[in-house]
Length: 256
Length: 256
DNA sequence: TAGCATTTGTGCGTATGTATA
DNA sequence: TTATACATACGCACAAATGCT
Image (cartoon, rainbow over all chains, first blue to last red; front, side, top):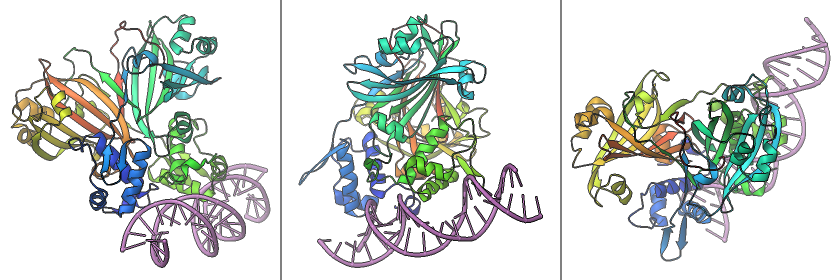
């Protein structure tokens, strides 16, 4: 089962096996027994040396996925992930409401710079219009969950950074700028290995995965006011989309 | 800038640097110049040997992210990803409509087995009720995009596999079973390194990332009929959530 | 056209990490 | 624990292609 493709992939075998077991645990493969197969069995299954399996299990134990006890085996630890709702009313703090005791936004950096092509398009601004860039970290109960970059029209929201810094919330900051309500128009969701910078800010290990979302918020009149690109620690959060109970529009065909 | 944490992480330095550059490209960091810094500059930036940077660039070139030309430099190639809409009417084939010439579902395996706790809960069945499990690959223009597992009440949908195999579509198969319309209730989205099995089915390299979705479909009466867990090749697809133009419900606070 | 600086491509030697037996 | 094989990473040197003067 060890195909050659994996060898020069830049990802060590033990790491690949760890990812595999992690996925299997996540998929409920070992649901009935709350325990992993023996190291010998895993070594046979993955067709590798038992040392390699042990290295994988040690990594999973470091990450709190499993716990190995000599003579007993490797048991699976219960995993908890925060669920983050994506919808028209998506806002960070309250989205986590109930799941965590304290949600907070930390503001890292603010800068004004000419809009990139993508940002200008999203905010319906002329190319290279000055835009405000805000860098934030979203945390829950002291654990960083997301690292985000937000862009605003610098002309319209010049005072935003000061208001945000004071209130500790973008929603509150926008309120101080006259935006009493806003709505998320769309969210694009992707995923990728975490960059070094994001790993540092989110406290992730090499090889960790982030969920990437690019979203646009609009004011009451539907005018786009904010574009955001967020990176969520994928092992700490799931995004959830709940569809309103309406039926009937296009006709499509299939699955996923 | 090379912290020790990264060294024994099981992920090669060149791989981490490749992920970094990939993220930077995705974030539009090099938007203005459509070219990466020189290998020497990147080596200095990441504080590694130029060989290591070259290995990272070679990997990115293999993946079609960049192209390097001797004497000239490394240019960024325009990236194309299929966008997959998530909503109440989510269906595989037509969701990709227009973006690809031909979308197809391949059925790998069918089995009947007792429902796991999670599946039983999602389908509102008694624990260990027999359920039908369908394994599929979703492809567009010959490229595999998703690998999914679907569960149905085996009692109600005994004939589904035959109908699906014949029509090549779950939607059509359900129609033959009397389900003329259905609706997606909710989708949970996560991400993780691809498992070996998924890498094989989707043709991905080690270290590749998958977007994981767990969703439940219900019939006209709101009775859950299908639970699915899909794994999308994250570098080939983005999930898109578009919010209906309605305003006003809860009050929340923040960002992402 | 020739000359030059810049940038990528290649070769070799060495040290360390990873995986097997 | 030891030995062996291969992948990874570094450092240095030089060849080859490009772009500009």
